[in-house]
Amino acid sequence: MCGILGVVAKGPVNQLLYDGLQVLQHRGQDAAGIVTVDGNAFHMHKGGGLVRDVFRTRDMRNLLGNMGIAHVRYPTAGSASSTAEAQPFYVNSPFGIVLAHNGNLTNTDHLKEELFRQDLRHVNTGSDSEVLLNVLAHELQKNVTNHRLSKRAIFAAVEGVHRRCRGAYAVVAMISGYGLLAFRDPHGIRPLVIGCCETPKGTEYLLASESVALDTLGFELVRDVAPGEAVLVDCEGKFSSRQCAEKSSLNPCIFEYVYLARPDSVLNGTSVYETRLHMGELLADKVLRVLGDMPIDVVIPIPDTSRPSALQLAIRLGVAYREGFIKNRYIGRTFIMPGQALRKKSVRQKLNAIGMEFKGKTVLLVDDSIVRGTTSKEIVQMAREAGARKVIFASAAPPVRFPNVYGIDMPTRAELLATGRDNAEIAREIGADAVVYQDLECLIEAVRKVNPKLSQFDCSCFNGEYITGDISPEYLAEIEAARGRALQSDTGKSNSNKHLDRNLSSGKSKK
Image 1: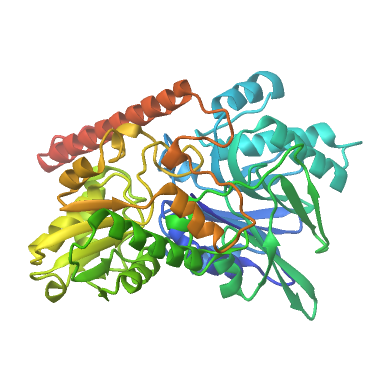
Image 2 (image 1 turned 30 degrees about the vertical axis):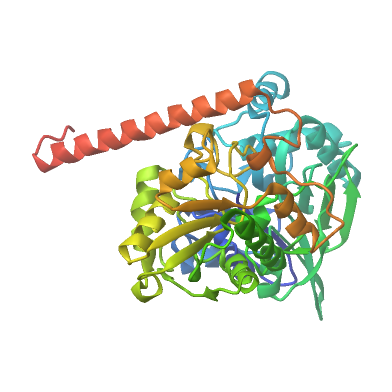
């Protein structure tokens, strides 16, 4: 899960891109980057951390030009949290290309081998986004005629990307001297929307991961980029598009509607907020079936993403809805934070209970999902410490039992709370009196109630069915092994840093 933006405007785009990244900050807090183009020169600034920390006034002044792309990064399975992997990425041949990517390629190792052995291209980091950039660059090189780039060659290059790349990818890229290119994988797993703004000087275009970026920047939502489609806006602002995949079908990641997207976004013609209201209604029906006539005194959401579901659930049950937790808005999303220890520590810093809403009551806590269970366990304990008589935990999503390989950090079955446990065991693990999960059929129904045209989804983290058809048990075992090696490496670095700190404090540092 990352956030991407691409803008072609009639004036400077640096402020537009910065403001757009602020709106998409929820999609990634690890790193941020902006590249603009002025003439044939790219201007880039990127770094680790939040958008507000990466960019200073002097950085913004250097981002010249009327066209640009931007990215907020969220590291996925096996990837490093480092400035070297901050996006956009740049390659100087052919023509000079910069690229930002949301998603995850599932055949990265195979592509790296092809790039090295056949395409004679060098990949400098472990990022699949750099691999994707080099595949695009090679396909462009193959399709140019007399060293001149054309619209036909660009669309043919995207066709080549679709033939070679597997997995999920929504992409914005700039080709020096030609324009802005955007495309989406043939399965349409990760979102990408098109917006426009009419000005006295002509039409401006914005492509973004979510429609909320269009709203806040004054652009009108036109439509989604179709699965397999490529969109091109040249340096003169002329818009064109073409279907570049032999076969395509829309299979959006259903977890976007559960958690990833902001509720005020519209993805694939579907209001995220409205889907979450329906999730609450259907979850209420499940609570009644599971708990029967057990008295519930109050429904309390885990802020923020579960609020619409919790409110609608409370209305359906005829139970009081209360805000029982106050959120510190200056702490990042715990789901995104790497490492169980850091995630656990952050919960108490992030949430504080209001005692009067819990004391002596049977409380139904509602969250969007339960992934690792660390946050859920801490929250249940906080509710009990605040005086709750009973604590029931309801999830607006089904049990997460399988790794997500398309750009969400759910890499190993061992880290997922629901793997190998039934509901009673999960309740014991998080300290709740009972746990109620949404049924997958009902989750799908909640989204389709808003947009019946959506016929299929990527629900792999819930049902283990991978829409790209190339995920084998061996592949899952390898990413789990890679995850284990990465965690061991992080532990080693942490221990090494602690050892160095002790040496420094005792005057034993080495030169």
